[in-house]
Image 1 (cartoon, rainbow, N blue to C red):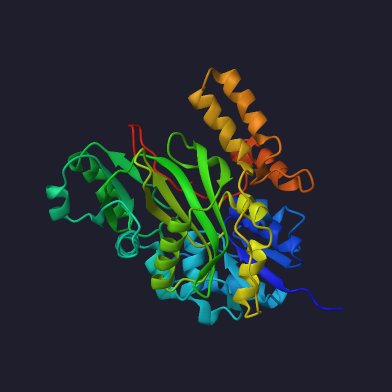
Image 2 (image 1 turned 90 degrees about the horizontal axis):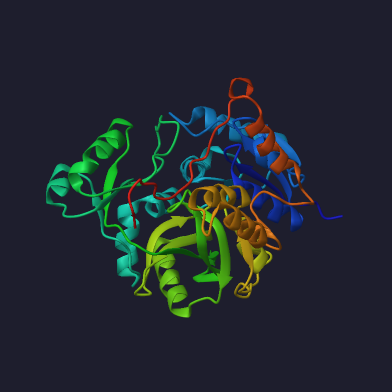
Length: 399
C-alpha cells in the first residue's frame, strides 16, 4: 500500500482559503494537518483535517513561529508546508531553511517581490499589463500628488514585524486628507504607498505556474463584494480565459521567478482594460471555485512542490458559480438591491448550486464553528486571530 503524502497548512483560525485548500488536498488523497494559533480553529474543524497543531503567528524575531512549525512537522511527519495568508507565506519563505520540510512557496526574494506593491506594479508594466501608478508615500510624493489617492501598506509582512493585523487600503479625496493614514502606517512600522484609484469590476486569473505556463488556468469575475462596495468576492463566476491576458500574466510570472499557485486580481473599467492590483500566492477565499472549474489544481501545485512529475490541466470550465454566503448576506443587508428582502432572496438563489468557501453539507463542522463563535458572548469567547479581508474600504466612492 502506497503511503499518502502529508501536507501541513499554517494559518489563522478563521482562514476560508486554508479550509478550501485542506478540502482540495484531502480529495486528492493527501493527509492534511492544520496549524493555527488556536490549535486548529475553523479549518481544523473540517473532516478534511487529520491533525491539529498550535503554531504562533509569524511575529517579532520569528522564533516562536519557527518552533511551532518545526514541532508540527516533527509530530505529523509532513512532506510539505503551505502558508494560508500573505504573512504566513512570506514567513515560510523567509525561514524555510529552519523548518525541516519542503515549503510550497517560492524563495524569499521572489515572495517579497510579489508582495511589494511598488515592485509588482513596475514588473506588470514591463510585462505589458496595465496597473495603477504606485509610489512610496514620502513627503515629496505627498506634496506633488494631485487628485484622489489610495493609501496602502507597501507589503503586509516583513521579518521583525510586531503589529498584530494588516492595515487595509483606504481611499482619500486628496493627499492632504491621506496624511493621517500615511502616518498611521509609519507608526505601525509599515511603509505606506500612494496609488492611483481605478474604478472597475473585480476579476481574477488563477492557475499553477510551472515551467513557464499557467496550468489549469481559470478566469473569474465577481459581481458582488463584501465589504461593499470594495472588498473580497461575495459572489464569483468563471468565464472563458482571455488568451492575451493569460500570455501577459505568464510573462510577468516568468520574470518574477514565480512557481506554484497564483491568483492575479484585476479591476476592469468601462474601457475593458484589466488593471493588476494584487497577487495572491497562497490559498485565498474563493479557491473552491477554481478547484471546481479545474479539478486537481491544488494537488498539481502540491505534487510539483515535492518534486513529483506533473502533467497538465485544461483551462477551467466557464459558467460555475461561487458564493461566500455569510459575506453575501451581510452585503445584501447593506446594499438592499431592489429592497432588502429581494436582495436576500437573490442571494439564496445564487448560493443554490454554487461552490462555497465554508458551507458544505458533507463537511458542516467549519460552518458550525463560525456560527457558534458569533453566538457566544464576546466575554466568553477564546482568543481568535482574525484575518482581515483584503480590499479597499472607504466611506467615499472608490476605485
